[in-house]
Length: 375
Image (cartoon, rainbow, N blue to C red; front, side, top):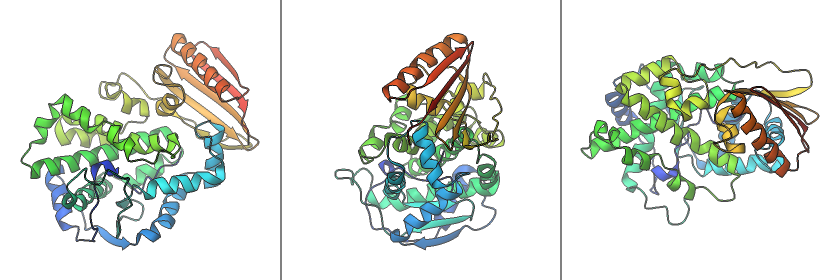
């Protein structure tokens, strides 16, 4: 699935309106170094673009983030019932969403920090969420965290390695964004005289920071729900995961996560599965059968989106093959026959509600589904 892997988005619920002006990156780099306990290995190149140039830049980033064309990506989303928007309308809606959120971004493939001259138009009533004077500083610290991730942990190489595994890519993306949010919060707390470690002990405060309530009011309600959830997940669930790592050993624990990244969104949603190693991710076959557009690794995030958290609990593995002629062949694996049965019932009901004539079957802890998607 598509993600702006090289264009990290900072949800506007962390920001507010102000006049944007490009500034040197040195103050932000020093702040990230001080918090993260690591030095930049070399300066970060800074390029300033006009907001009118952003659409083309975003499309370029999107094209690099999937192993198929953007038109094929739209067909895959519709075939898997993730969106019900006509393919030709998908890209304008996605670009509109991202353009409304991007304040600056770090391109890990080009190793460039892009500043954008103008801010996006914010929804009415949201302009006063944060002190406007803090905006540029917050965004800079967030995005420069991605630059230090790139220089120390091989961000760009890992992104390429996960190109054909959507679930692993989204899990890794969540680590990157969660860490960047935490570094940014640590910086702003430090400026206010508040110790990050004290906040880490406050469950109520952490719950508020990772709540989606503020984010939801800042996303155009006409945005397809799947796009909105894909945008929020790495920041909100990623922050929760990173906080769990930090609580186990501070920034050194985050270093260990980079050395052994989570490979599934199940591990992001259920951090104990990762840290206690109670869940062992299975390998994913990225090869395509003849006539297929793609073989997708959906993961718990996508199944939770389609059938809800209860029916997607106990996910182990999956493979969803989408063919050029519209056929869809799904195989999923679950922790037990009981969890498989619960999923099979929910998935069959979901497909029926979508008027999809599907054959859903279960054999032990394996559930399969076959259907032909409408064009």
